Image (tube, rainbow, N blue to C red; front, top):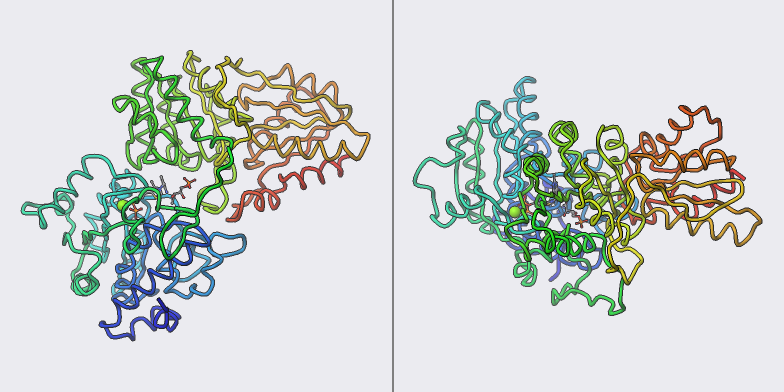
Amino acid sequence: MTNNLLQTIQSPFDLRKLPKSKLPLLTSELRQFIINAVATKEGHLGASLGVAELTVALHYVFNTPEDLLVWDVGHQAYGHKILTGRRDLFHTNRRLDGISGFPKRDESEYDTFGVGHSSTAISAALGMAIAAQLQGHSHKQHIAVVGDASIASGMAFEALNHAGVSDTNLLVILNDNAIGIDPSVGALKNYLTQVNLDGTPDTDTLFEALNFNYSGPIDGHDISVLIDELERLKTVPGPKLLHVITKKGKGLRQAEEDQVKYHAPGKFNAETGELLPKSTKAQPPKFQDVFGKTLVELASENKHIVGITPAMPTGSSLKFMMEAFPDRAFDVGIAEQHAVTFAAGLATQGMTVYCNIYATFLQRAYDQLIHDVCLQKLPVIFCLDRAGLVGEDGATHHGIFDLAFLRCIPNLIVFAPRNELELRNILFTAQLGLGLPIAIRYPRGRGHILEWKQPFKKIEIGKAHLLKEGNQIAIISIGTIATNVSEAIKSIEETSEIIIAHYDIRFLKPLDEIVLHKIFSRYKKIVTVEDGVKKGGLGSAIVEFAAENAYTHPIKILGIPDDFPEHGTVEELQELAGISINKIRQEIYRLI
Ligand SMILES: Cc1ncc(C[n+]2csc(CCOP(=O)(O)OP(=O)(O)O)c2C)c(N)n1
Ligand SMILES: CC(=O)[C@@H](O)[C@H](O)COP(=O)(O)O
Ligand SMILES: [Mg+2]
């Protein structure tokens, strides 16, 4: 398909000049543009395909950017980006120095609010709407587009509760496709499904009870119905909720049929929709699969084991336990706060709980972690996937704060496996009973060990590992960044007389003080390396240890500088942050 019409749209002002009759063609071209771009450049697919009509209709009816449009999560905003001046830049989506995969305020005036984490749109749009009232801009419209999985989160409920007693020009559009990344769950999902089946609710809807003017459900792929309803709602004062039914992946057969895989499918053939074949060579496992498969092994021996994921069964691989032991594995929806306190409740009753949360999303449940788990010494086992730099998802998704924000919590053990075997063994060790909560953080992607299914070995809590001795400088690393450190050391030792010691501290908490005293007595200079923020993490811990023990060695901290890393490949971002093999080698040379 050509995209002749789409090519004429530089901004929504051009779009609004088109006759309504041209909009279906424009929508098809937009959809095809997204398919072509994601097929070769990768990214999120299904969500943007599902809202193609809605995106065109919103920019057609509302006077964006004067009217404020807020996308929840933002993984569905590719069409919005393409229509708002970024079509010709779209090939740089999620690449280093390119545009972000999510709406971002400093990228465009049409991106009214930075997103990536879910369920923020209603709060943000309500804030904007109340600001408009206070500033006397009563003509402004405020629209939050939120998915059925995201609206089930606590934050979204809190915002609805507040908005319902406001008299603001707020329109919440519930984009209901009955799926998040994985199928949506919970009582609200069942309620929405029923409303959808009935066609129209015959009693007061949940949203009417919260004082919203409810309309729908309407067909989100019928652009003319959408436009008529949005035009009508523009004239209705107060908080409104429009229930729109869409199909995730709409317009690409495979994406409609396998919505989980095509949420973010990787490269595929734009014409046939088929995923590009993966290498047939045996590969080391993904860390998430080491977690998921090991948990099944452990759960089959230990009936007290329970697993929890907040809406990421596939991403975390908890799906394996959900299949094997459906009664003991829970997808609680996008509800990180609930997931943590739910885990705490289970732990009070002697259950052995593995609560798997992406490191970045645990940020949302910080109080629950402190107040409900650690303060009460409840031995919940937190498995923090996607820790460190995650790559193309960028600033909103890097799991780089966890080491710093976990280290300051009393009673919490913090462990980062160096490889798949260490992950497997700590998962085993944790269920033997630690008497304290533990956070186990590991990265996105694959490790290096093909034969990872080895017999379990118990890990001694608080014990660091000497990986190699040296003569002047000691490097202390934590987690899988040890691979970069080992490579950097190897290349230096190949070309010089210097021999560098390397320790894997493993436990950020409790620190192995015996080993640290040995390091400080034996070596003149210390380097720490972590794939988390420098402020507050491993480096800070070592500096504090040195100060407490009156060691005056120079200590060089390598980690993420005090800034938000953007998107790019992990290797590119490590280079920028100064923790790539190359940058570690340079730093060591500088010290020598
Ligand atoms: C706080 C938080 N938890 C988890 C995620 C991961 N996540 C991204 S999209 C998504 C599903 C969103 O589903 P829905 O709101 O229904 O939107 P759809 O993809 O169907 O358009 C999830 C769980 C996230 N972005 N933020
Ligand atoms: C939009 C969002 O938050 C998720 O889709 C996220 O991109 C998933 O990340 P992984 O690909 O690492 O599972
Ligand atoms: Mg959805």
